[in-house]
Image (cartoon, rainbow, N blue to C red; front, top):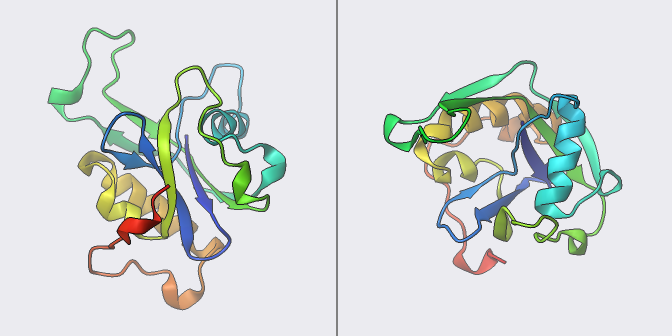
Length: 166
């Protein structure tokens, strides 16, 4: 399950994986006793400190989006062995204060920095094997948050201002 958190305009929440160079959207697994929506709210709180009252649920992808890990990244010693993920994606809008974001709500935080970025930037900046899923999720959910003339992904690579990272 993946989470795209919008500021209500053209920007989305983008976070750096703790202790790494990679940036991504919040995401996580669905436990056997949870619906995808329940898992989304649990992961949202664990990874960002935001609770249900801080966000508005705008929509979700119609179906599941999948990616496969490159062979060299498959951890064969983990059980079960993960070869990729099947995810439903949710689009949320922040309605609470930005100051409510807190990355330390789990014993091992997923992220150590975050920033707002242009809606389409994550497609170009996420690790290569997730790009197609990000592009599909953002494209499907764009009508829920972007004006009609901004729903198409620009052809050029998105660039972030270096000073915007938190």
